[in-house]
Image (cartoon, rainbow, N blue to C red):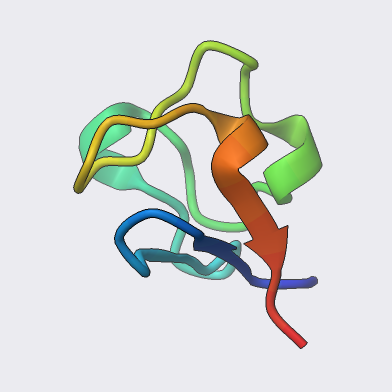
Length: 53
């Protein structure tokens, strides 16, 4: 699965780890995260994330 990086603060969403503090289980693909999820560091929406190459 691809990792995604917040273009505002640099937070990396790793699908293998998920975001358990926000209720996102390990193994959850970025595409499957609810649209109202926000970056746990700076609070911006999913639209501010880009695929990490």
